[in-house]
Length: 523
Image (cartoon, rainbow, N blue to C red; front, side, top):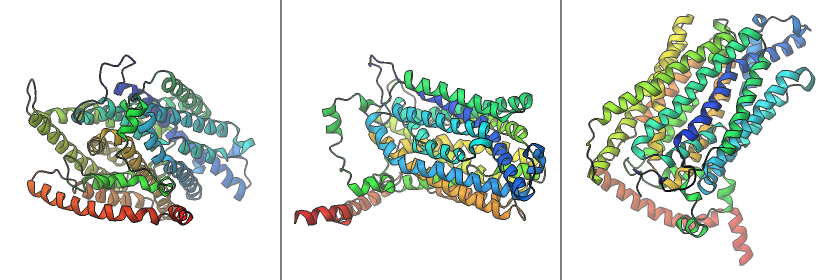
């Protein structure tokens, strides 16, 4: 077996896993989440607008028009609340990301997906109860729901598990296109969800009805993942003895490694990728980390302040941008991939050299898609900050869809950097970085917007453009191993690293306080 062969064979009598089994629930996740993006912002605005006017003006909440809520003091309160909610979500996700990554390698990807969909259902339930009864029960559930969502395999862990599921079912040279299908399903859901919510708001005028729709969709998703979705990982079906034998090369984790959530990041520096330079994997992770920092700028809050948008206009905006991103995933990226791979040798029975050329060609394609996509993201974020009217602002959002070329290519590069039985661990480490990035983003970006909303509210977009530029620079540091000089230099560094690791391994056990205690007890 090599990285060019699918990890699932066709001889299994059970339901044969396919990437489509993982793509469908992600469509439902995107539909539910997309339907709630704009209603969430308006919901938070209405709640904190009521609190503001009751506190400062003793006004009746039934007499406050929504246009009077689009003021800087209320936006400050909403920005702080969103930062707290996102911090709870991603901090709790961070705590379990490494554990869930290792668990998916041992117990399967489907288990993680089931846990995550149940957590999403509980999260929406908390929002629904708050939307319907916030006058009675208060707003505490707004902060409890995100905490539950993160603990039960949050968004980053779910995406990592789904990507590992797809990698189990596909060959290395086909993964970028399959990941593009995954992203396309997310954009379809992100386009249909806001459109449905905008129509519900237009005809009923009630935010609660949107939460009901999301609740029903999440119930369907839970039932699907529990009763229909098969397991993908080949290592789950191995006998216990075979699994134990396959894991004998792994160093057992100590107590400190289990406690230290950042110990999962060691995999980024453990092995040299087969087709990339020595430090390509850390550079990919750095580019993805910086890109995650600018994933969610306060677009709706800014548009509500500058252009007087409501949830209706916000939903239409997200529908249009999601359709553009969908076109990039199902049209432009597969076309570029097909044109690029026409240069690869084709034979009835390709040799090992031919397969090596195919993988190298696919890797080079992914590298350039990452560079182009992140570069466009930086440019469009700067254009959004410079936009003086709705047309320019919306155009910048449409052009930003080109940045989606980077997402499946990053995942395609990551899955070729490690062995198949380490995919869950690697993607778990990436989920940790994504969670850290999202926490920093929502605390930092919201703080910048909170601090500059009175004087320069578009400052946030310029900061995001600078960070995206740094991410693009990291992407340009990812290179293929193309010369023997690279191999010689890296082999020398590997020998030095191996000597250093062997020296450190003998002292690492004594570095852990728990181990020191055991050694003293034995003495």
